[in-house]
Image (cartoon, rainbow, N blue to C red; front, side, top):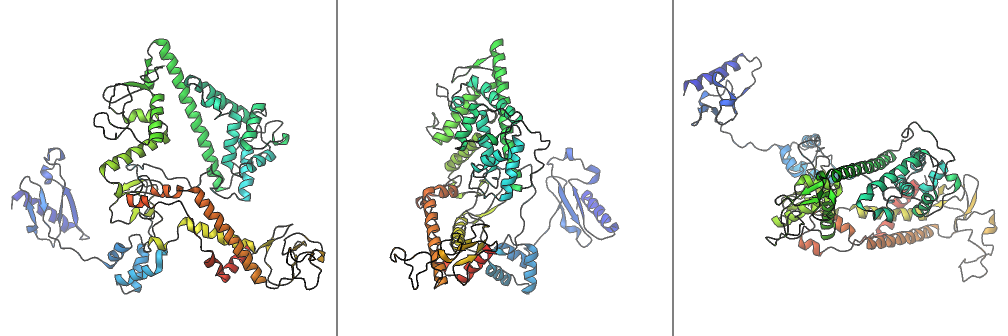
Length: 631
């Protein structure tokens, strides 16, 4: 043994001898202490030197190519613990739960696996979401919980509607009264964001054809005027005829005089009264949209000032596409030839290629599909554009779609389409081995686990055909609700629900109102009911029948008939809605990279089948559901 290495190892043993708690000492060093300098180490490696009292020094050997001390440790494969065996089959099971099951099953992993299989997918799962890391950036951010500009995204509650009306008054203190806010909300399906968006368009004229067709030079002025109109309308109580006409078109109704203020109100805090969590997020969404619009206007104004200054000073450059004179800092150039274009032309060209053509065309040199956006100069240049110019010229959503298209084209060229998976929740995509059935989203903001075959939430150990899809669950719930509501009678006055178990058909509500159980109309006395003895009450056949029957012979049969008719009607309505949506659901499930050829051939228009008979064959469960509804 070389003496320096031996003395170094002996020094380590001395350290261990004076260690009072007898634990191992790890020395991370590339050289002995007397000669240790990171800068002079030829291979810049760091070698761990492990030594304990019980370990023989003969295990320390010297490397052939330098003086580093290297430990040679001969290890054997350790047998897997019962917990590790369980985690191989159920990687997401909560460790504490698995350990508890191992104790209950005498530490036999096979018995625990069987128990988890029998318990279904409801076993406790480990929270696998890591802390957000700045080193990993997701291609797509998680979608918000609700689409606030869709009337079907959520069902507004009474408290939500009340607070939304107050929030609209707070946002438009110069013009809206509480009655007016409720009117505009009602005309917007009681959704705050929809009403807010329509009011902004009505007050500003944003989105009118005249604005959309405005020239590039006039766009900045028109948008500034639009934003100033919005600011003025919020502060003052003056609304011109043009704005009122736009309100009629937007809301498809004519607002009344008492919907507007005679003088503006003054509110100090526009968020003080919001308690509803959905409305809080929705109001923030609307504010972000306005802030982004203001930023766009400021950017355009600055561009216009720079352009006018450049033209005045003679430093403007001609765009190679539209031939306008623009400032040099607005120009973009291709990577190789340096052809110059203005940012507006580049943005327009990208939008046409991404949204209309769904491709970047063909490379003029190779005649193969281009992998990026190519220069659109007339001389046939095949150069691309640097990322910097794309980020500066494109809107965030357009750039996102550009990246998606580029990723898809590159994946198709590499032949990895069959391996690609995209998260159904946030859209993040990654290549996954074909043998892996569960796709764990790499997006640190999402980490959603989904089945790569059906793209639903992970349903281990069930097969895809054994799991009720979200769409099927929603459809079944709607049919069950329709069947339940069919047998519930609501008081015409107080709207309290009730179900009759016995007695005559003259119902008396707790509020004192009488109504008919058959036709559900309000009645005063028994004159509403048929007065003919032994009448069969066959409508259209018994001409003498004077009204609804006072008694129902078979109440259960009547309820079952009402439930069946309502359930079948709702099921037919669901199938019609699904047929109208066409392939929308399948396109969503296909993800960013589509389906493989065999799956693409099997795509059919979205269909929803609800087994009405099985729903109606559970009278006890249905009775319990009805009891919960009216309780």
